[in-house]
Structures are given as structure tokens and as C-alpha cells.
Length: 474
Image (cartoon, rainbow, N blue to C red; front, side, top):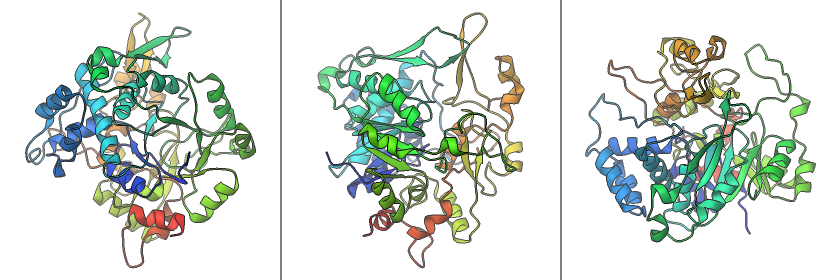
């Protein structure tokens, strides 16, 4: 089959929007939507009035008509929320999610993929995070209902995803073994069964297409483990270097921290591409490959092409809030852009890239001023207490609450609520009753200063087509 040369990175929350993915896919490359938290995003868009009617248009094609009607009745507000009002939050995910939570997750992923595929016949992908385990099965099922072509997944070791994709082809149930601290050798299983949640789905929609699965890896060791132990077929890999934006794999072994608090990568972390070539599976290189020269280098090294995130993150079609995007581009044009790899900010414990933007969470005063709140919960950790009960905690939640649940105060130092702050970066901040707005956090790859190559002379913005034209030498 013909593989794309360029995979557009899957950046959450909603930065890899359907508009961006649609623009990239129309050019014959692989547009990718972010499925992380997209159910909440869909509900929020409805509450903000669904400008352009895009969500409702997509929901009119959702095969489960009763679900679509319920969601519109519950969330859609004609004209949008009144000024100063925040959107309604659905329940947080647990191992026993409500039917409403399943509905917005399945429908939200359907909507985003459907809109990304609208108006052309080229492939579209979805990006999810292994660390955000509980919503993943419902997210995949919703995306498959919209005929998604690729599933790309990182931030962990997604051994269980290929089998889930196989099961959902025929609307069969799929199990997901959860990471639960304190469970020892006991397997804690979450099951999503489409036929239980949506008994008539198989009658309405015949067998679904099985998308290709591309895990994101940082080493050949991980790639070999996935190929050997995954519960289904791996169709290729995205090999990500530590200069990529968002979450990074931590350095291997014991590693030093530099004077800025960043993890230091060494020789052990260098990727051996010769070993990937021997696997005879297609692969794409990511992290610092956003230039035509690096695209050619990747192809010369045996790759199908590259995955590019940062260049697309700040183009006109991205889901970043317009003001945030313009501020970052202005910093780049003024030669003042700076990216720090924080070893503490993410509740996952993975290194996370943070763009230094005054007035955002990278500002220590903004960080210290925010009261700790955990009310979205996608990055909560599961744990088993001394009575054998499953609980949920996040190092970014209030410190006393986290310690009471068995965590340590040291684990909370420097953590931030990425769920809220990334949502705010996409223009969907929560607004508290006292008028407080959730602050923004901005992430990108280390090559942020190089996006100037995509900005047409005399302009302070650029499009996805500008990125593709430069990368492809058009």
C-alpha cells in the first residue's frame, strides 16, 4: 500500500483538531486528530453554541441516533454559554463509567474523525495515550465507527491495543488490563462491550474496518517487545526522539538532571535505525525532523517518512487558542522562544516539554497562584488500598488529598493539572464561580524556533499548506 511521507503529529487536548487533520489529509498526507479528552471537548463545543454547526452535522451521521439526540439535548446551548460561565463537566472516569461518559467518549471520537475525513477520500489517523487507559477502548470504538484509518499511540507500552482493534471490527467486547499500584500480580481488568452499551450497533453498522496500528517508541528494545508480546498485529512504528514536543520517554537507566531541571539523554538513548530496518516494518521518524532536509535524511535511512508536530501546532488550522498561538509565533519571530523539558510538571512522571510564555503556567507566579483542583481526572493513577479497594489519585491534586490516599508529598512537587491547562490552551478553560480562569500551558518540540521557515515573508502566521509546501518542496 502507499504510505504517507508525512504524518501530522497527534497533539492534545484538541490541538490536533479535525480542521488541521482535514487540511493535511486533503494533501494526501496523514492528518491525525487527538482523541485525548475529545468527549469533553465535543460537549464543550456544543455548550459554546457549536459555531458553524460542525458538531451537530457530524452527529447527524452518527449511527446510534438515540445517543446523538440525547447528547444534543443535554449539552447544546443556542447562542452559547453566557459570558463568564463555564461548561458542565461530566463525571470523571472510573472502572465503572456511567453510560453518559461512554456516550460522549464514543461520540466525541466519532465526530472528530468524521469531520477530519469530510470532503476527501484520503486516510485519517487518531492519536491516543497509553497513560490515559480508561477511556481508550471507548475512544477506539468511536473512531472505528467513523472509519478511522490509523491508530497511533505513545506515552507507555500499548500491548493491548491491537487485539482491541481486532475485536471491535465485529463489535465484540475487549478487555484492558489496568496499571494499578499496589495490586501486585493481580490483574485488574476493565471491559468495554459495545453490544452491552449499544445493543443495536452491530445491526445498524456491519463489520468495521480494522485500522493500521503504529505505536510510538523510543528504542528498538521497546519495538521488539511490542512486536513479540502485543495481542495482535503491529503495522509499523513511529520512532520518537527526545526533542519531540509533549511527553517524552525518560532517559534509560539512572540519568542526571541539568541546571534547568531537565533530564539529560545520553548514548544509551540513541536510536539504532539499522535494527529497525531489519524488522521489515514501515517506520517514521519524529522529533526534530520538521524540515525538507530531515525528511530526505529519514528516507535515506530507510524510513517511510517523518512525523511532524511542532510545525503544525502553531499553524492557522491548529486547535490552539488563537491568542496563545499568536503570542508564541510572535516570540519565535522575535527570537525569544524557549522550550524547557520539565521532569516534574506532568502527573505521569514522564518528561514534558513546556514553552516559556509569560502569563502561562511556565510563569512561577502563575503556577503558585493556582489552587490545586482535580476535576477532569484523565491522568489519575489507579491504586489498591489496604482494604483491597480501587482508588484514584493524581500528584497534581491537592497535596493533603493525595497524601491521604497513600501518595507522598514529594511526588506532588512541581506537578500541574495538564488536563485543565491543556484544555485552556485549546480555548476551553474552566471558569470558576469566583471568576478565576484556568491558566494555559503550552508545549512544543525543541525545534520551535525553526517554524520561521514556514512563515511567508511579511506575515506573522502560516497555514498547514505552507508547512506541507516547504516539507515536500512544492
